[in-house]
Length: 325
Image (cartoon, rainbow, N blue to C red; front, side, top):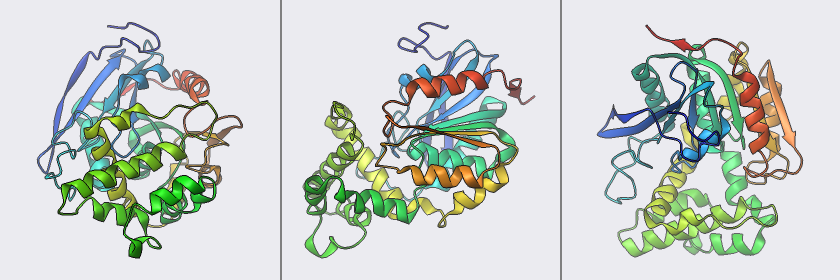
C-alpha cells in the first residue's frame, strides 16, 4: 500500500529473511509499486542498516524499491553486536554474492543500484561484477575504500579536525599510533577484556560522527548512543577498512571502464571531507557515459537529497521494469 510520498509511514508489501549461507540470514523488504522499475538500496557503514528513510528518494508509484540489511547488521542475523559472532564470512565478496542471491530470489532481471558512502563502494563492486544485471547506478558520497582513502579518513583528515583526531589516535596503544589506525582499532575490538572492546567502539564512533559533520549546524548522530548499533558499526567498519574492502588498489576505478552501457550518476558534495571529490571525479573520467553532479554547498550526505530525488525521478521512465520469468 502506497502512503506518504516521503516514505514517512511507508510499509513494505513484502519482506523476509534470506539464507545466504555461513549461518547468516539477510533481512530484506520491498515497497512501492510491484509493477514499477526495480531499484536496490545499498546502505552505508558498513553496518548502518537500511531504514525506511531511504524510500524518500523514490517516487513509490514508479519504483519497486528493495531494501536489505547487509549481513551482520540491522535486522539481519546473527548480529555482530554480539562479540561472539565471527567476522570471517563478512567481506565485500560475500556481500556482492548476497545481493545477487537476493535479486534472483525476488525474480528481478535488472535493477537500479542506489547507494551512498560505503554503499557506493559495495554498489560499484556489484555493478562491476554483474553489469548485465544493472539498469543504472546512482551513487552519492562516493568512495571506493582504497588504502589511500582509508589513510585519508583515519589520519590525514586530522589536519581538518586536529583536536578530535588526536583524541582518536590516542585511543590506541602508543606503539600503534603511527600505523594503520583501522587495523589498530580492529585489534582492540578483539581484546580479551570486553571493557577495552566497548571503549574502542565508542572512540571509533566518536571520530566517525565528527568528520562527517563539516557543515555548520549539523547535530551529532544519536544512532551512536545505542550500544548495539555502536558495536556493530565499529566492528564492521574497522574490519572492512583494515582490509581495504578486499579490493585491489584502484580495482573499481579500472572496473568501471566495463560499465559503458550502464548509465551512472554520481552526486557529490564539494564540502564532503570524509570522501573527497577526487574519487568521484576520477571514476566519472574512467566510466563512459557517467554523469558527475557536484554540489558546492553540500557535504557527505546533507544537502544532496533534492538532487538525488530529481536524478532518480528522471531515470524512472528510462526503460521498462525487468523481471525474470
